[in-house]
Length: 88
Image (tube, helix red, strand yellow):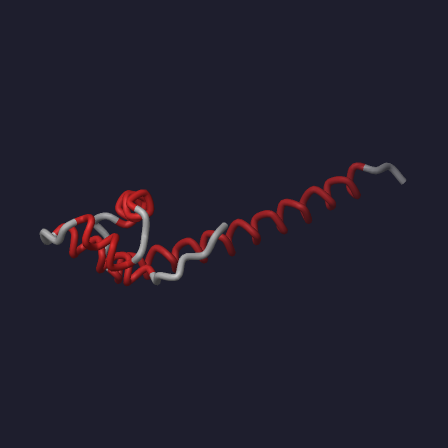
């Protein structure tokens, strides 16, 4: 995935400027981005504050760690079942 040169807080500020009445074209020209990029930002970040975004990132990280823990536990359980099911 291609990384952006803008931080999430900069993106949110640009969206807020648009919501407060700044011209869409002016914002895109100032930032040097395509209109499609701004539409994607607006779709993804519209209605968010910087604090919401920070919390979202924390929750995504926690979710990733929990999924990894679950996968490890499921693998260990499957291995234990295989060992128990074998007849000696």
